[in-house]
Amino acid sequence: MRTVTAATVLASTLSLAIGCGDDSAGSASDGATGSAATTQDAMSSSSSGGSNSNASATDPASGSETEGDSTTTTTTTGDSTSSGDPLTSGPKFDVAAQDQAPDDCQAKCGNTDWSYVWIANSGENTISKIDTRDVIEVGRYYTRPDKQGNPSRTSVSIDAKAVAVANRSGGITKIWARDEYCEDKNQNGMIDTSTGAGDVREFDQEECIAWHTPFPAATTQRPIAWTSGVYNEETCEYDDQKIWAAAGNGSGGTWPCDGTDGIYVYLLNGDDGVIEETIHMPDVDCGGTFGPYGAAVDFKNDVWIYIWSAGKIVHVEYDTLNYEVINGGSYGITVDTLGRVWVGDSPRRYDPQMGIWEQANPNLPGSGGAGIAEDLQGRMWTSTQGGVGWVDRDTLTVGDTIPLPEGNGIYRGIGVDVDGYIWAVYLGGTTAHRIDPDTYEISTYTGLNSPYTYSDMAGGQINNVICNPPNG
Image (cartoon, rainbow, N blue to C red; front, side, top):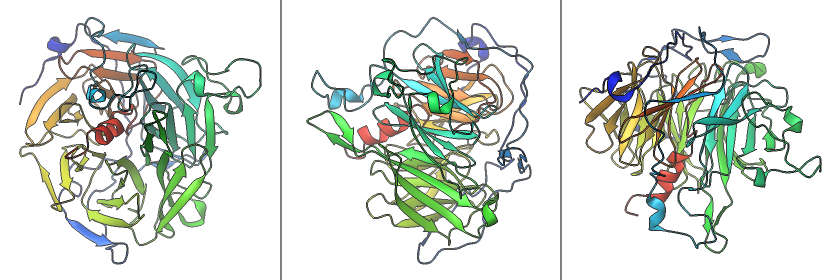
């Protein structure tokens, strides 16, 4: 294993003293081992795995929990810095060459015209849209009509046309990524939409908000993941795209997810937000606090959902809606291109075919809870002490560690964009970093507001698993 020094990858450093917030102090060993355990007809309700020694409190003003402290000593707006020359060598995403659409159509895999990462600003209940190639913010949006909700999970559709946002205290919102898909609601001949961080429109006046579906019974709602839809060879578009979401309902409509009503998994119509399927799981351990926590789809469009502090993962089949519960799991979740489920923070993988968990030994040190993402070279990236690092997807060999400017703290949001760059979002601060997977050059965006996010926030995961299925 090689640790890349800051001098190697940084031409300059940021002098930021930033505190961090956290959903928990859950350890990386929560539910580290386990096997496929139960089906919906016979499941264990016992809790195995992590503790929540820093359990978050409920914000009495908004009804949503406050996930730790987040402070900054430096306030900047919309700054982008790079550790090297601008990365202008073009997209790294190359799977589109396997199955190119006609010249007048959008490519089936990847997107060469635009790429955005969508990061939740928990400090102000907004979502930031950052151009991943220029590393600048080009839009910011409220995610619920009442400007509350506390967003923390985002999922980008496979065609990158839209993002779906989950609000922790309930509600799913779809936002179009490009003006050409937005609706001129006031019929003034133009699209009235945000142009950057300082231009947040009223929810009902933002014309790139496609729809909002409220979930009034939800007391905790985080997981969200697009399905790919069905590729139409004639139109070169993805039809029938759906959105997976999950929620926990507490007693009397109050937080937390206490198991009295249990977990619900939903499948929404991506076009209009209508709930098409509801799967009630009263027999699935709610974990006692945050319930369903993160989600990822595999190449079959099945969804895999981590249940906070229960040390369990729920797998729901797209075609049948049958589900199973797997013992094991911890903070962060993704699915690799071979259909194996990974959890972040001292990363480990679950093989559904073998029914076993495996991890490197010694492993990449955890940092207190982080997302995880596969790059286009078969490496699994997650947060580690002082920065980010990767583990080989197949051999479980620990690779390099890349220090990031803030040093101590948690880079909770970890994602990959369609060009193959890694994104790391500093918990509770102002920054997001783009890391070149080949050179480890770092470009930094500064201007976020207490970001808390991990998910397929740039769309690289769904592209990777759908375009590179096993034996495909």
